[in-house]
Image (cartoon, rainbow, N blue to C red; front, side, top):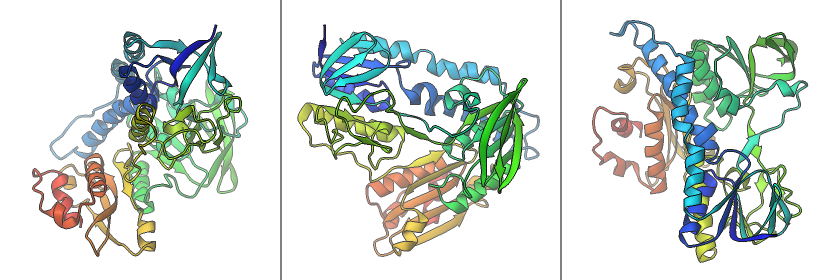
Length: 447
C-alpha cells in the first residue's frame, strides 16, 4: 500500500535540515530518507571531522615555527588518538538525528531512493507518495578514467583511517587534496599531490596559491603539476601509481591513493527521468525559488542543484531555509548569493570572497596588495607566508573582494564577507575600534 506524505525529503544533511524542521513544526506529515547514516556529509564525513584533524596540524606547525623562540621539544600527532577524538564529534550524530526526526513524528527510511513517477518514491520495498519532494543528496566524488580505479580511496576513507601510511598519493589539486596533504604531512607521512593542470586550487588567487605551494614544499609535500594518473595497481602491501609528468612516463609508490579531484552532483540512482526532473551535469535544474523546472512538486537544495551557489555548507543551509519558506508560504524567497566566502583549511589557510583580482582589474577597480609576513600579528608567531589582497571601489570606498593567506584567514575572510554583504566602505571600517592586538585590528592597514 502506498503511503502518502506532505513532504518526502531525500537526504539528511545541511541542505535538508531547515526544510525538515520547519515543515515538521507546521504539522506536515514527513518521510525522511537517507541511503547512508543520518546526519549528512558535513557533520559525519566532511567539514566538521576534517577541521578536527586540521586543528592538530595547526598545533604541529605552530610548534615547529616557534622552536628556538622560547619553545622546545617536539610535538607529534598520535593518529589513533586523534581519530578517537574525532569520533567523539561524529559517533552520536546518526542516532541522535534519527531520534530527533522520530520524536517530531516523522517516518524514517534507510535505503536508496528512486522516482517511480512524478510524485512517488521507492525506497526498498516501500513506495511513498509525496505532495512535495525535496532532493538534498549532495555531491559525490567525480568518476576518474583510471585503470585500477577500484584501488582508489575517498575522503570518507581518509577521515576514518586507523593509521596513516608512510607514503600517500592524492589525485587532484583541489580543496580535499591540499587539506588532507597538510594534515598527513604534519603527521609524518610523505605526501604526493598529482594534478593535471598547471595550477592547483584554480578558483583562488594565483599569487597566494604560489605562496601556499612554497609552504607545502617546505613541510615536505611534493606537488606534481602537469601530471596525470593513468593506472593504479597493487603490489603486495603497496600501490604503484602510473602516469605522466610533463609528458614523460612516471611512477609513484605509496601505501594509499586518495581521490581529491573534485565532486559532482549526486543524482545517480534517483531515476530522475521517471520523475520528470530535469538535470544537467551541473545538477538538478531549478528556478530562482529552487523548484524543479520540469516537476513543480520537486524542490532541490545544496550541492545537488545547478545554481550559482558554491558547493559549501553555509550555502546549502541558506538554500534549505529558502525551500522551507517557499513550501510553507508559496514561492517568494530566493537564496542570497552575494557573498560566498570560501576557505581551504591548509596550514596556513587560504581564503577568498567577492571579486577576484582578475575580475577587479578587468572592471577597473583598485587592488591593494599587502605582504603581511612582517606585521606583528604574523611576526610574533614566526609565519613566513601571510598576504592579503583587497579589492576596493575607489569611487565609493566599498569593499568588493578579499583574498587572504595566513594563520588568521578564518577571522579576516568573514570580516570581509560581512563588509561586502552590507556594502561597508573603508572609511566606515576605519572608524571601528577592534580589540588589539588581533588580526582584525590590522584591517585598517589593508586599505
